[in-house]
Image (cartoon, rainbow, N blue to C red; front, side):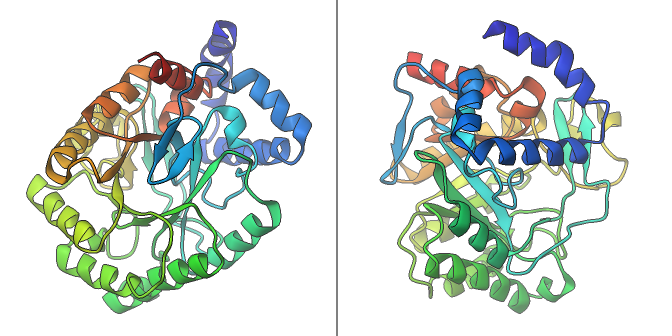
Length: 351
């Protein structure tokens, strides 16, 4: 296993990092999709990267995750990897963010590596094929046995959704269609994507209340979470939590991308002007602080998915100790390699 880890870090990663990050992403999604189409492909990947050890499963809101790690929204945004991710050590995947209409996202470049800072500058702008196509794909292909399927929902990155009325309608359309089709073991309402028309409009408590009021009209029988911002003050963050509990949301994903470029280790690796949120290490400290504050404020009945800067098993344990029930990640897999999920599960099982 150590040989596989070293092969990624010493040989494959340096090669991959020579190419455009979005092209590399697209390549690996295509490869994962191909391996997931048949049993032999899934078994081969599981033999290399799958977790085989003591029980690391967690049951959260009545849903059992075979490992405590969920692939965060933003990687499999078109639900193309739902047949393979369990073989790579994930207990779940959050596909999307899904929007009511197809969206090309922001103009490229949409991804930039900040290698020394262990971060990505993410400017995708909710690129996805739209809720109808994604529902169709999941219905046609299904989900790998044992893999939990979450769906992240956002508003289409278009001028038509920039108004409050248009944005709320966009969220409602996707939320209702997913519920009517019975797609998803849970839903996450992405209120904090920083890269769209109008910015993080639903991190304003009054606007969030309007959104949650409309979504409450939909009969939803699975857990509901919200993807939270991390670049706001605790007082505003707490107001958002109050609204989530008022509308009987089950928990939150803490949190989204870091907007403060001063949090990056090497400032020159970030754009001079804002062009996307920071993933990875710049998120770690703040997201963990907010997890701890949220656990203390909301108590044990509020589910927390800890996301941001999980680059090692120690980072994952730090978030779990702070109060997270589950871990979400993307950047750690990219910077450390796909063996990271197995190593986190082993660390959790050893606790």
